[in-house]
Length: 396
Ligand SMILES: [Zn+2]
Image (cartoon, rainbow, N blue to C red):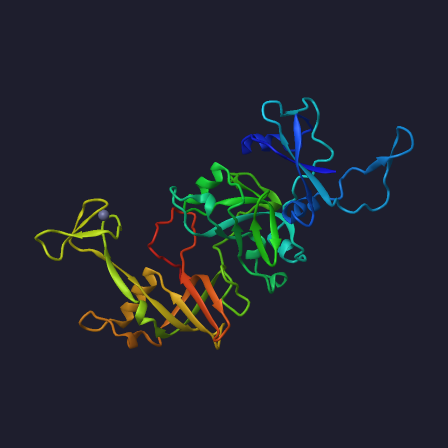
């Protein structure tokens, strides 16, 4: 029989309990959970079934007999919690790690993707190379869904075993997944952290971290061969090219020819040339000069930022309208090709220009009434500190 115990302790304390034999006192049954109603709980129980020890059933008299036949996984689970004041969980000192303990077994992402998707839990080490939204330390992290684009060494390999597999996969971290303070802090840094994703749910072709999934930050092991489950990558991260199986909320790379410009959404705005802040005030008495509301700098030569979406003709996605919101760097390089002698730009002069490779996040895919993909050019997290908003993209 399985039971789940709700404890008031911190996450750290719960991790110290893992694998230990404990005595429980002062417990009450909150609920008898059934497979049909609590699928998330049973997807976790199923990863621990059958037990590593032979099952025993009450026999005649006082003896227990080993059950030799196949036993189906349990159909119910008691959810317990401690009575206030009297309830407690104590580790039984001196007891070795329980023989019943089954730690999650991490697999390479390629192994997981090549096995059937049966709404099961899985564990893997992976490197986060892009996340959305980018979080600030002020962000109310618990209330929002976070998309992490991850990869490992097996997905980055280029060999015949990888045909049909993406080079990166999205992991959705649902608000129900409790994140430790250490993980929250790591997610607010624009750095390509490596995590152990424990008991992520793989369902309908997606990885989702939900309740009972755990993210553990992996510190780089300097000078240590971290073995088969390392998420250290051997070279620069490669992305899959945009094609007909690219999914929404994933990342891809693409190149193509500009066949249109979305003029209705094109605009530009001045920013502070010292701190990059967009909130500028007109300086009194001096037309054309601004003062920055953030750093109080007098901005005499503001940096112009632009919003520009273009339509591309992509050879990997023919018969499809591919709309890309370009980064500042790509806009600047595209417009430098299209500038008129007086410094202005003509829309038609960017038509026919080649762009790419661009790294992009897939925002939308529609098939009706017309086939259309909406993308935003992005900057991957790199090992150096990423500077926000510079829009740099590596080019071949
Ligand atoms: Zn400023």
